[in-house]
Image (cartoon, rainbow, N blue to C red):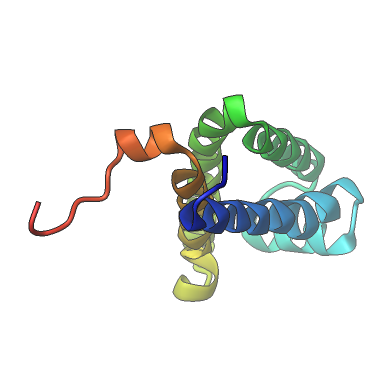
Length: 131
């Protein structure tokens, strides 16, 4: 069976999300890169949380990749992203580049999942004005 164009776009969006999470968020935390502790200090979080957050992000990313648990992972990711947004808001970070970045990431994550999962599209259908 050949996948439609929307399914392929969904796969690409999901791949971007996964690669971003692994490369820009999980890896720096798990590898103990100094930038992670600098960011945590700037946001008012104790440095000791970096490893735990990295493990949580890795776990959720792996759950997102595994199709039977991808929706559960997306729901749990929204909790994590909401916490990140609240932290940035409390730390008075710039609105569009930092605070709302979690929203952008969530849209890419859910958009990719919605485009590649027929059952999710049936649950949340796109309705036209004339329908």
